[in-house]
Amino acid sequence: MGRRVYTFDADLELKDAGAVTSSAAAQVDGAAKILDMGAARFDGLVVINVTAIDIATNDEVYDIVVQGSNSATFASGIENLAQINLGATEVRDGGAQDSTVGIYELPCTNEAADTVYRYIRLYTKVGAAGSSINYTAFLSTQAGR
Image (cartoon, rainbow, N blue to C red; front, side, top):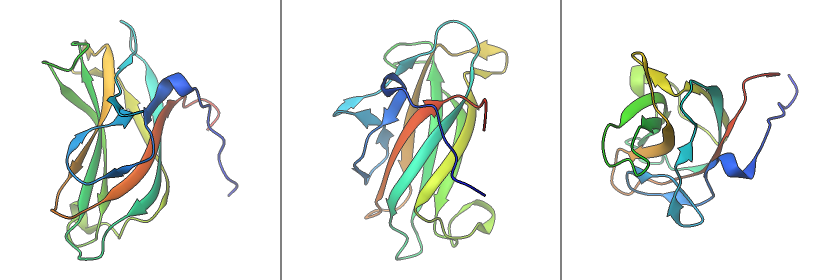
């Protein structure tokens, strides 16, 4: 199968390059990145390009979560909308195989339980001390996949 082509818009970048070593909201240019998706439902695809992932001690696990909120600062009303679980087989959900570098696709929407969340961001949960993952991510369309 050939390499996929994604629609990229710099305004929809959710995380730029840089190692994540502790749980935190994703950043672009050193600042938390929050996208205003408007008041209507949207369906999209988060393209995650993992360039480095530490799984050397078999206790590393990383959850990359698309979160929504109706607070522009994520001060309240946060909901987890979509998630991908990466890491070592020994600690991944369901015993999934070791994660590797490469591109992962995470379909998402800003609606859950009949509530549309105007703002979205990425949040990375790092599950073991000393763990590190480096990735970039952006929101794209699902059309033409």
